[in-house]
Image (cartoon, rainbow, N blue to C red; front, side, top):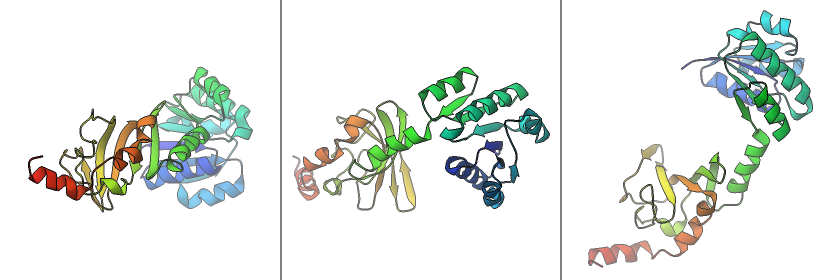
Amino acid sequence: MKKQVCVIGLGRFGSTLAQELFQSGHDVLAIDVDEAKVQAQLDRSTYAVRADATNESILKELDVAEYDVCAVSLGSENIQASILVSVLLKSIGVPFIIARAANELHGSTLERIGVDRVVYPEAESARRTAHVGFETGVIDYMPIVPDFGISKLRPPEEMLGHTLEEAGLAGTADRHGISVLAIRRGRTSFLHPAKDEEIKAGDVLIVAATNENLGKISEIARHLEPASNTRHSHRNGA
């Protein structure tokens, strides 16, 4: 559903957020006090305005209260302004506020003043990097709850030619605690793939797993018999 979104603060996080929302078809009002940042955002937002969002009168002049969502994306050097803007947005009646937090204290303060969702982009980026950079085959990672997330990964070579069941990755309660939610094969995606779906070269698996179990993917693969041997055993009723 198309929404009206106001993004306040056009640093790297805010400008990217505004651009992604705009490209997704939402009406985006982008606000910053820096004229250069506003100019850079002109073709990446519905409206880009140079304004001081810590001024309640300006927020009212821009009809910010009429927007469905406001995202306060001021950087870590502007914590005081971030809190003040969030308070003002609550006071003028913005229905849903998302705010970027620099640290836990900042985040807890934002929650106490009524911010609906607090995000920690630096911490989330660090968690993602810890998996994408250090777990073999992991292309992307999204944390869901502490120590559990959804990962996009390339299966180890030893799994190629095996079915999900043979690889121990079938069902929601497989023996390795890793659930395959989907398989991306070229331009096609298979949601909830069958247990007899064969893992092929070029496949990308979307899996849900604890961080510990995710780290066992390579070990699981090393203990698999070669796929040709597995097929031969099955044909002979082994």
